[in-house]
Length: 159
Image 1: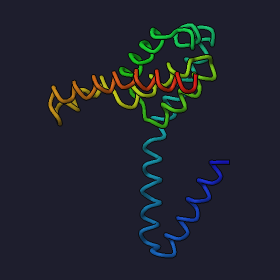
Image 2: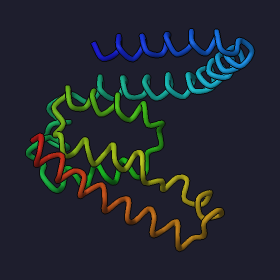
Image 3: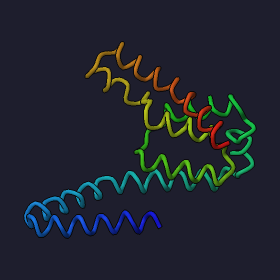
Image 4: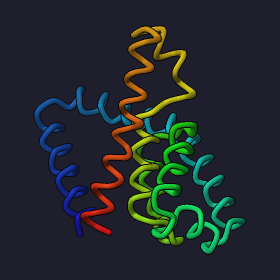
């Protein structure tokens, strides 16, 4: 139902924009399609990898490693994997959904998604070149700690 509402709003806004300024609307739609075209290969590659992993690793293993009973060790494992792995945010959420359906715990998936979106070990050198090593380290370290806070909060509220 929410999807229908969002799509309806988008269509209405595009129609309003088109009547207001046809050229800008056409440029905006072209830019959006280019962005979609650039994101799609990454998205498909990551979804294929996740699908293969979920086919190979059965839900019992996922449940043991990052299930609700894995407690702090599962959260730590999820946080480490999320810190090392790099994927777009929209893929992180669909990955989290797949893991939840395969037996992962809410707190563990919260930690994974938090670190996927906020901590970047693979991008550390690039980040450090812009804001400095010390600032990049502190930002990533605090984001890593914040992921535990998120995990325990979400796990406590929803778990």
